[in-house]
Length: 95
Image: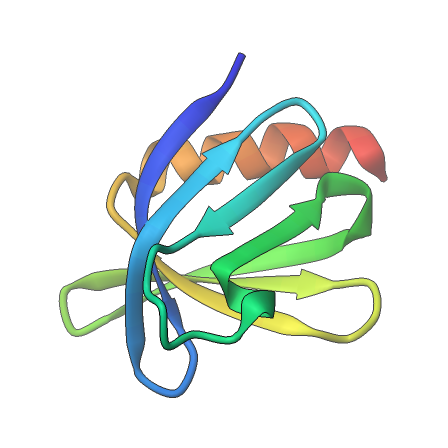
């Protein structure tokens, strides 16, 4: 079952979009035309996620998703409890 989250990626500023989560991956999507193709449809498979952290910056929950290849993606998520629960369940299953 797919889940949807309002999200912004923190990469050279804040870029609005959303995250779609399914059984295999989370995918950040944005409709901005001036963004690199990599960020327009950024898929992160759960098996490729090493871990994640959550912290509050000002009044925003910021998740850092750490990939097995060393990449780190930072997102502001507008339902942090549900997103944290999803990542806990899915990433733990893969490791």
